[in-house]
Length: 130
Image (cartoon, rainbow, N blue to C red; front, side, top):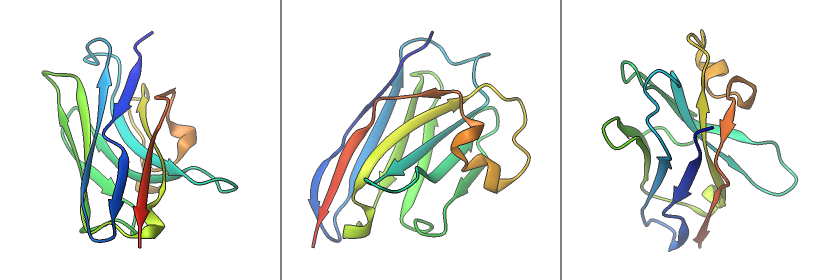
């Protein structure tokens, strides 16, 4: 099974930026169709932040991060990224990378739903100080 390993988390002041990476341990070609970033704070459900259709590059973003976060992929390096700008304390969470083997996830809502994803990384903490 391909492992997903996140990195790039840390602490930053409000208004700052971070770039998260998610490296797959083997080629995702032929395995995954969608990849996404989720985040979770204690006591709350895991929230979909951004997703990408890795076969074509189409993206979906949660309203809370539109215009601030950018999801991207490097298929050659089997790495997923999340560039996070203009961070605020409400962005503090553990961020998870996820991959889906489903060929079609038909709606943006489902593309940001944890139930659509089969494989998960271990998470990386992002803390934004006010």
